[in-house]
Image 1 (cartoon, one colour):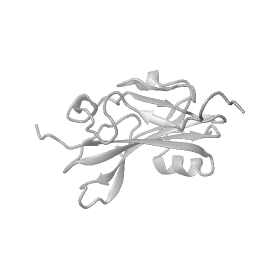
Image 2 (tube, one colour):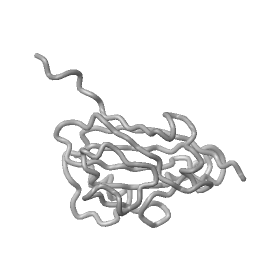
Image 3 (tube, helix red, strand yellow):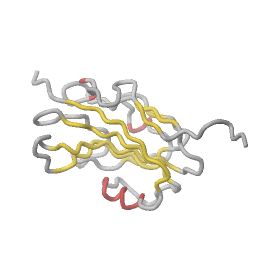
Image 4 (spheres, helix red, strand yellow):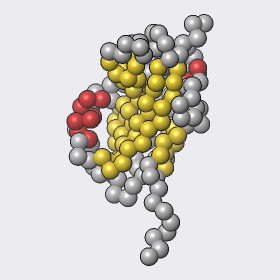
Length: 166
């Protein structure tokens, strides 16, 4: 049976940095704090929405991590969106996208700003079989609870950053 080629797994990538490489300064608190350009493909059939969570499990010190710091939460991204351009403004997000709260207690992207050492930043994309209704500026924990049982696929891209001390 020909099905039109192999089934692609969900993938997330960036033109700003590659897997395991350094996130550029312009995307951090030492630069312009621009969200990195992100691209995705391989969204599974049956997916109704996407969730993007960027977090840092190495806070505050990679040698003695105490918490995961949340940098960006986006819910209900359209499955056909294909990605986000660098430095996207909240008003330019795809229609229907809901912004969650980061750990600065605000919506929007907050770039890497590690107090000590080189941290890892996980850019996690989830394809869901539902649109998450009723969420207004949710926290990462609220989104993760709402996603339970609805994740069709998951992909991640990890970048790193250490302050230059300039």
